Length: 324
Ligand code: FAD
Image (cartoon, rainbow, N blue to C red; front, side, top):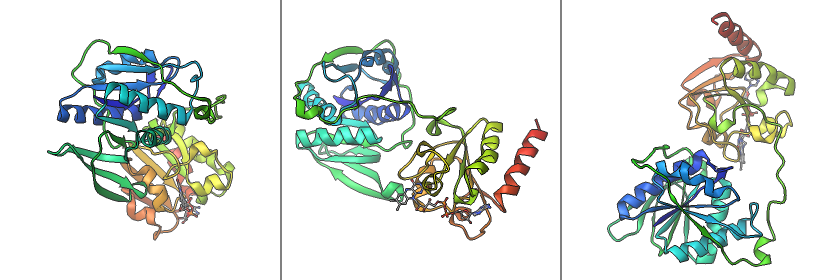
């Protein structure tokens, strides 16, 4: 069995987990085995109906009196116990911070190596995995061989498409109760507070308007907000703008921020540092607005306007409004 860690919100699987299921299905087909999902949380069993169309045969719902919220070590150890209970061949996790944290804890417990941020995995004749994976936020692709009793891999965000399988019905749900001790629950989510962010989450937006240090201050984001509104999109920012305190941290795009894959990314006043670009390389089209014709982003963009964003963006907004 190829087990897949599925993150969900009230029983609705998130996009990156569905991407990970595409990888899991490919591996299961190559190894002639089944796909299982492992879910945590009170509403985990609710994923069964959602996951069956993605080729999940069995949902393993981890239940434990003390596991009502995220607890990295306890989740990792529960996953390891489940791997042993079902004799899983491999575990696929979404390439998120949480996916990596849980998988690495499981790796320690199982004493197995883990390969993170994979963008392609082939099963070799000897059963090992030939892996291509993103390093340095995707600026380098590493080829590696993973030879282990239980292979632990994560699917890099937005590298695998979300695809339904040719499957119907509902997956079987089995409850799994791990044995945990207090030490594994030292770190746990105690309460969740929702952020201030409104509108479409960056990772899901079809149009993203990013603003960097060139925007010049928090108030000047109004023009970018207006452009995003007109195009039905959302606003993001570079780390420099976040560090200035102009935008909330949730808006950050890049290596240490959100990975976006919109139809169009409009980057205004952003230089195009490699740490920023790895967050937006999934964009279909990049339009850069920058005063400096030598800026790195101008070379990397599909389209560029060399000019002051404080003039270009309002003109763009007027033109869009004029054209209805
Ligand atoms: P700058 O580099 O200062 O560029 C500003 C740009 O605006 C310039 O190109 C300038 O020509 C242009 N400009 C100025 N005025 C105007 C105007 N009026 N109109 C139009 N253009 C104008 N960065 C990220 O963004 N995301 C990350 O996740 C991230 N992670 C990092 C992780 C590590 C470990 C490290 C070391 C760095 C990371 N960085 C990240 C920082 C990154 O290296 C850059 O410093 C940052 O992206 C620069 O932001 P910027 O382009 O907004 O600012």
